[in-house]
Image (cartoon, rainbow, N blue to C red):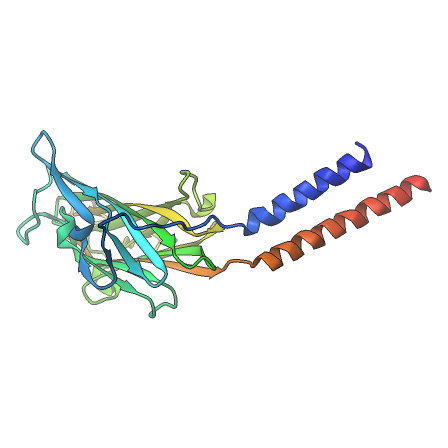
Length: 288
């Protein structure tokens, strides 16, 4: 390879390396005409349109409304329950064996201060009575409105009626798996962190009521998909029925400033200078 082509490849490689770890896609969130952005505690049903399938069962389709916490917009929510023994009830009731089967039973609220980063909270009586199982496929999209900030890590947790996990230890089985994607469907979690896991099982030693992970790169928009399982059996003795329950599902997003263009140019210049020096030494060595 001649010196000119070597320098070209080296510069391209440097630019790719620098931009690859620092460039963040634009957030580009634009509310749909007629949509509403909620900023205070509200009914989760405000983000869905209810439809009835040909089999008579209800389904919930995301509408254009959104929820805002600080500089984070949450929208395009997803809510799909399944029950054993099925089918799921059509409406929530304290007499049902599982809940929630309808997003209108959930209260959604924001929290910007308690952890030092924006959180969205989903409050309800999440439960599966002894001998029952409840499985919910649940998710949403997140956009950062501040072009100078990017999400760097995600936090998942759940709590019991007391606001802590203490009152749901060894009470049935609560298991939550969470995956994080970019808008092209690529995972933003490293293989060792994918999925995030949270549970209340006394049999586990490496999983707890919360989990978190750094993203493989900072982003200004991402997609969250959770699988929430509540099993009304003991985690040690599955023949023993126990109520599985929790009350608060919490999601947090930490962030950092996006590198400024001047910083990017400086990094690229330093990389190019370093490569230039390397090629100069190689020429001198070949002339000796």
